[in-house]
Length: 233
Image 1 (tube, rainbow, N blue to C red):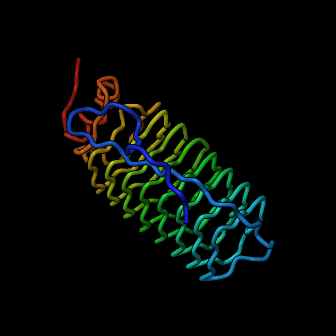
Image 2 (cartoon, rainbow, N blue to C red):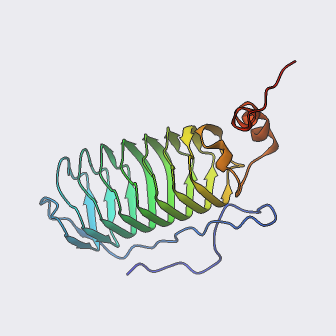
């Protein structure tokens, strides 16, 4: 099992009154054994392993469980990981297009410097997850549940949060381009420190989020359009 550091809840510092900070994972991986280099197996059980520069493109690991693992430089192009469980693990420099992680569980996970496109996480559960650095295009989180999640220093291009529930989620130095919040539910979501905030749909779902004054001014035309307000002069 992962040994946890003692201390407080983490988060990014002072919060506005009534805004609860996200709890970050505090991971200390045990000594790891190198992965034997075989292919992923459906419903496979991977515990205390280090996956380094492995190529899992096109493989089927649906229902697999990764616990106390480190995945570094792993290729996940069209990899099927539907219903997977990733627990107490660190994923660094993973890359792939069309990775299927739909209806999966990520708990106490750090995702660092990922390069992903079209990754499917719809219907998934993310709890105590940090996404730090990297770029993810067309991230599908429709109807997912995010609790205590921090997006930090990363670029999210057209992320889809449609119908998702976000609770204690923070965007820190994170670029959000063309975000879709349609039918999403936001609770204690902190967008003030986002480097760029561009909402394509669902600006009316921002109730439950906190934004900065500058962001409010930037979003004013979108908010006005959503409310049916015509601005002239």
